[in-house]
Length: 132
Image 1 (tube, rainbow, N blue to C red):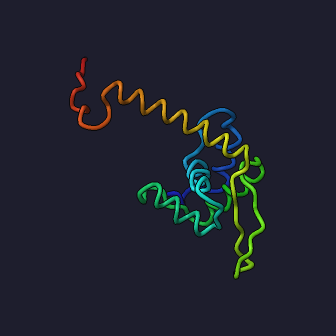
Image 2 (cartoon, rainbow, N blue to C red):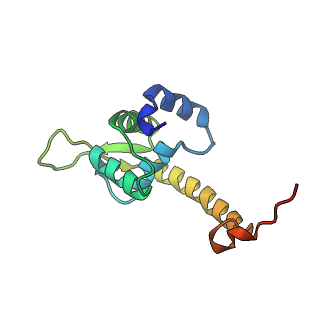
Image 3 (cartoon, rainbow, N blue to C red):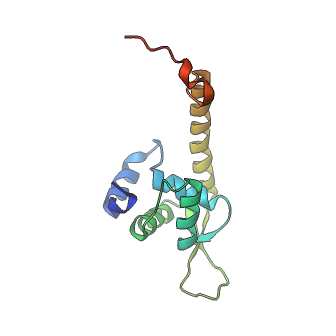
């Protein structure tokens, strides 16, 4: 199953149920990409693919459906931008979006710390003692 198999309705369902749960991968990826600078849609797709080493490939439906929801949740905003292409819309993180991204990153930071303590990362991975 690829990202293109996810419908806008799937994204809406996930985001309305999330409350304080982890963000869906597409949502996190877009917020993360916007943490560098404001971007237009195609740039977002490229940055998400780059950030994920090609593991997350956004199609236009998933991208723009998620952008719509992120705007409705006031996590990102469309911004005026001088461009040679008037059709391009640029988006940036809001303060709320940056706070939500930081909360997510703190969760992942804690998870990585725990994985390191449990020797699940790197060269220590083979040190796990399995019991039955």
